[in-house]
Image 1 (cartoon, one colour):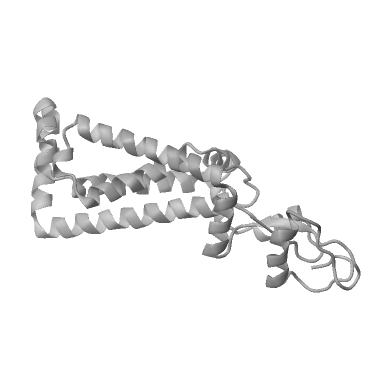
Image 2 (tube, helix red, strand yellow):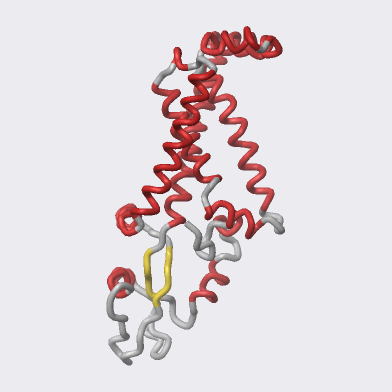
Length: 240
């Protein structure tokens, strides 16, 4: 919208035009000729997300590389402890989701987000998320790996015998199988959702600012109760 003649709020058409305007000439109000104020926002559609990802293809390649490094490390750990004999499709999916979440924890955006909320009450959100994902990951591992996969590990570490017996009992029972399968798929859905959230909030597309509000004012007004702000990954976190 235009600050001078108050020609309404930014429309969808203006937003689409602003994408091209950010890289070329500035847009002007058709009524008074004043330049529109261009700011940034998150992608709102999947096509916008793909477009923004193509523009930041170097960042995408870096994130994919980090995921592959963690995936290789997890695969090597499983190979070291002789757990690959029972390797299944579920196991691969869980390892990919785990690699994606581990790659997030080493990103600059994640560390800046934690830094922004560390001295606020919202830091408890990260503690709860870590605890929840740790529990889900533990039970997901019990589901995707058969008890026999780590029999050799138990032979080398006798203190794991009780845990191995409990795993075998739960794994072979009908109720235990249903419960572990449910937790495993819950872990996969939660992990994929978290990865998508960080992917979408790491990218920006240009847009026309609302009437009478600059970029900083718009952030303060819209982020008072924002869940992304509570995680430190809203628009004011510009790290990628």
